[in-house]
Image (cartoon, rainbow, N blue to C red):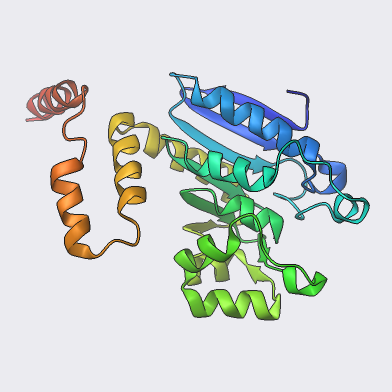
Length: 250
């Protein structure tokens, strides 16, 4: 898989790190190939319970490698990068994208694949497609307005303005923003809080949310009742553990 994306495993959490720090983790085709290989491996890994995507060095990613665009990218298949992002977003387990420093344009499209965007105060989000006479092709026009609302998305796309981590949290782009010095500890605490809960529920709830996105409420409610996954195989053990714990306390 090469070194363009690094993988680290800890207690069910898989951390994927974009690893072109000398290029501010600019996104080129070889990096996307490495990311695609890692996502495919996670799909087949029954021990993986959470994915964290982050960047090495000074930032998450400065965005799509403009040098690649200028010389003409050779893709392994049409719409390759978009399909990799979609594959990451569709993983049946929680995905956190952890953003520090730059997260511009193509990098923002990649970050939006996360179920949760975790940011430091120093994070800098922006969509600069219009600065380069480009339009999104990796999903931003659909995912961004679902997070921040259509009119805030228009503002971001029209102005190409940079938003800080705190601003991103305020408009709903980032779920969580922490002080720079709390970035690593806060990310670890978030991961632990997710890992403490049922992977069955995480996968079932994510599927339920994705399957009903955009449906009228009445249709969505019917889907929840009649097509939800119901009880997981770990339900009885979890309830028993809770009852034993409370019994000991009392």
